[in-house]
Image (tube, helix red, strand yellow):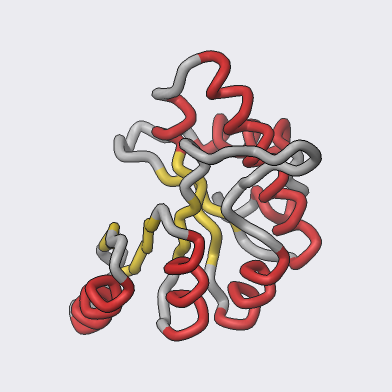
Length: 151
């Protein structure tokens, strides 16, 4: 099994250097950035395996949720073969009201990924994942069965 290398940078050039270093180590690269612009640049210009979308600390608009993911990023991810990551720790550690918002944003991202036939992956810091729990969570959130097969 490959090593997972998580890269969390707010500067594109630093993130690019970390991705190049990770590719040399032949690990699975997971990029995690709070900025939508950096996520798009990384998807356009770099080869990564998983893009982890930050759902917390966003401001929703009146008629649309700001989930950090849209159809433009979905098409780029599909073209490059990048999976979209879901940070379970972010959801588990949030408060009750914030958890409702995070799950709604996550459902919106799942709908976009369904349309583009993108792979989604649950990522958790602890390795105490039960595969059946993750699959059932994915189904409850609206993932089709083809998306939950490889969780």
